[in-house]
Length: 270
Image (cartoon, rainbow, N blue to C red; front, side, top):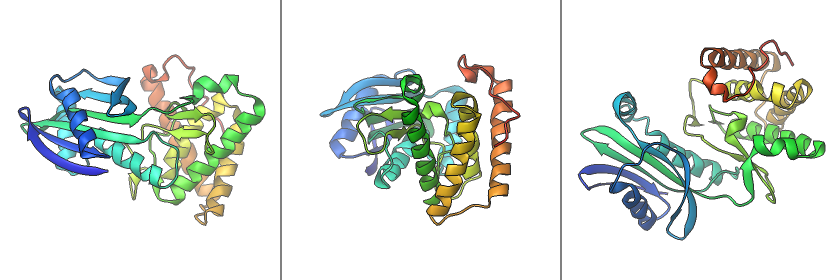
C-alpha cells in the first residue's frame, strides 16, 4: 500500500491506500462531513464493493489517540490497514484493505476510517457455527489451531482474538477469516501468544465445549512444534489460563461486553 500525507479541507490528512486514486476518493467520502462512529457500513470505493468502519473522534478519544500519534504508535484504522496487508502477504485470510484515512486538526486526530473489500460467501463464524455439521466444526477448529500457531510462529500476535473477530468463508482453501487486528501486529509486544490463546479459550470452552477446547489447545501446541517454533507446554498453559482468567474477570466488571452471552466458565482446565 502507498502511504502519504496532505493538507486539504482545513485539515491535515494521513492516508494509505492500494492506489492514489482510491485514497483520494476515500478522503473525499468523509471530507465534507465527519460521520459518527460506524461499526461497519457497506459502500463502494472505486470499482470495489467495500465495508467502511471508523468515524469521528472527540473528547477523551481524540486526546488518547493524540498521545498514541505522538508516541509513534499509529492510529487504529491505519494500523489495521497495515496489519491486514501483512497478514494477506503471509497468506492468511483477511478482508483486503483498500484505503485508510485519518483527519488531524491542531495536532489531534478528529476522525479515522478504514475501507476493506467485501468478502463473498462470508459470515460471522458464531452465526454459522450452529448450522454446521460436526465434522465441519472439527475441521474448522483444526484450521484455527494451525493458522493461529502459524501466525505466532511468524511473530504476529492478534491481541483481540475472540470468536467475534472470526468469519467463515465458504469455498476458500482457508475458511477462517481474521478481523479487527489493529491492537496487535508483527514484532514484540507486552501481550504475547498466550494472550491470544486465552482470549480464544474464553469463548471456546463454553461455545464449542470443554473437550473441543482442550483438543484445540493440544493441536495448537503440536502445530507450534511443527512450525519449528515450539513452546514449553507447562509454562504456556499456565500463561494461557492466567490470560483467560483476566479476560473473564474483565467481563465480570463490564458485563455489557458479553452482548447477551452467558458468563464463561472460570474454573476450566485442559
